[in-house]
Image (tube, rainbow, N blue to C red):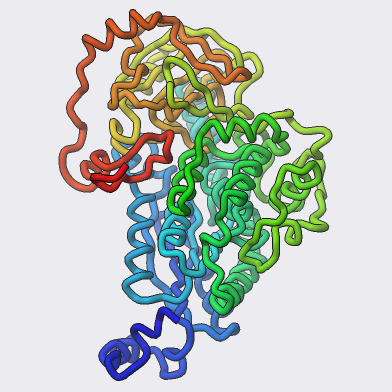
Length: 557
């Protein structure tokens, strides 16, 4: 066992003395040490209950013959940091989380890990660390929030942001806004739609790193505690059999995850996190692979923001296993791939029932014949960009629009609030990429305000930043190369005509190569927005959104 480096032999008597000081018994020290990495926090609704999840995990580990050791991880609530300086830290925190989990686990010689994340960047950050360490690990999320209720209708955080737009447009009064505030987020857990947190927790099931139910069992349910106990027990099986994350996260597992991503209609942020996870596993995911898989994968679910269904309903309908069983039935999954359950994907999903064919459409009657995400290429995005196709109105799938260019999110939001954006416009937000942001801020404020004002069917948005999983409408992000790197998006001017063709996966500005070259001669890269601290270091090391915005080791390709 790895832990023998600090528990066995005369030379390790000083280390044992410190373990005794921490309250461990002689018997506990002799057992496998399992790191229970909890991102519990009192500021994040999705994490406020994780101490209870950790206690349940510990009970499972004890029951199965291990010694649990709870250690912390940080987390950022994307909803709370939206629209201000704090959002610069959201994506950047993923790398901090990965580094800190690596540090704690390696330094203290843990034999295995139970990862307890819940919200956006915490999930991929922990998974990246597990793959980097390559010691037995299992993901046990905190579960999704229950749907809110406003005026008798189920709702979620995305409608809360849209309510601001409605208020600004005079469509909602003070009392209505307060009702939305108090009714949209009724419980602990990750926000109730198929936003980034729930997307990644579902995809952990598809990758094989979590037991069935990880992505969908609601946070307040007692079933979530039982799930945590089973996860604690199962990590001991993984340790005994020396089953490691890279044994599970193979090329086949990654393809399974992309396939499930397309069927569920996951957040656009999955196209950042899956390549980053693949990177730690030793694989490269090309964005064109996402398109190839999307072309043959039916979109079976329309959860918020794409539709009016919520995570609790997906859970009742059979969860991720039922979705995967539908996909396996038409040969779209690698059913031989192994999982942390000790069984193959095929064995795990065998007999999984689709209990509600409206929540999970049968493959014969999907919402659409193609997946929920589309990746576009053209003279604006030579290395690609992404749009949540399943959340785009039909009339916006092929669209020609007039550019309204803004430097940064704040400038764009002011123009939208000021009524300066009109049908037929496309809001172009520059210098919000991984380097330019820095940190690739989410544009939920401008997209939600546009939707709340009723512009989701006549105004598009384009940015080298990214979007929340709660975004809907013709919102195209992750433009690569980004403006800060001299990408062509930096050359777009007010009045330029932009052509969007989502079915054919193209995005172009109606300019000749000669005109673009002329504009490039006059382009001046602006100075960095942040020159000190973590964000400055992050901006210096981060790679393109097209490669998952992972950090590059200086001197390495």
